[in-house]
Amino acid sequence: MTDTLNTDIAITATPTTGVGAAACTIAESDVRRMSRWVRGAYTLSTDSPVNVDLSGLSEAHYLTVRSSAKVRVRITSADGNNQAIPVNPFAIIVCSGEPITAIDLTREAGVETTVEVFFAQEP
Image: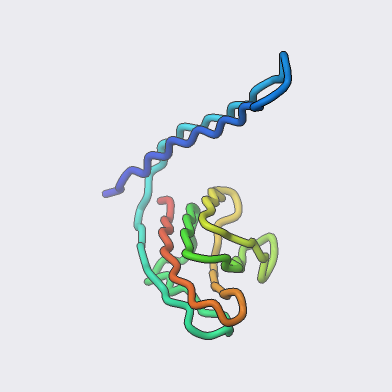
């Protein structure tokens, strides 16, 4: 049995000045099947990286990170180890072709940070 992951994202940039200035809209609507998914919360109270527990998933094809302050998310996939992504306050990564096999989180030095993660594995 599989669950369904529905994603609806709309980003619109509209200039506040300028006659005839163009606006930009990017919209994405996606439905994916998931064999398993995990949600977790972390409090980063030291400056050392914290490994995210994949809870038995062999890989993650979808990752969402939301943080209370800037956090560095490092992912490992077939494309390489420790690929660093700065997140403040959120990021969504969809990677069906090269799924994530490891994730860790590092806070800004001295700033206690709470982080929520959601990740899912496709069948």
